Image (cartoon, rainbow, N blue to C red):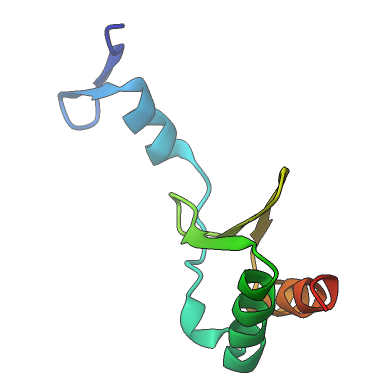
Length: 99
């Protein structure tokens, strides 16, 4: 499939649809795992992996949200958090889930 391109009149260049979308999206504040409660993070990893689950940590492509995916048996939970507080709350509830 060919990528559509559009003329960028401002800069005199061509942009792909994806580039146009990225340049028009809202400004976001970048999230950072450095502020996450380390004890909650370690506990969540320990409890979940001890129960045979897998946890994947990431950040969305716009860097505006944490991305967490938990795999356990046939279950898959994928969640997004925009603040460290939301992520810390999720990690605490995840620990309770695997007690």
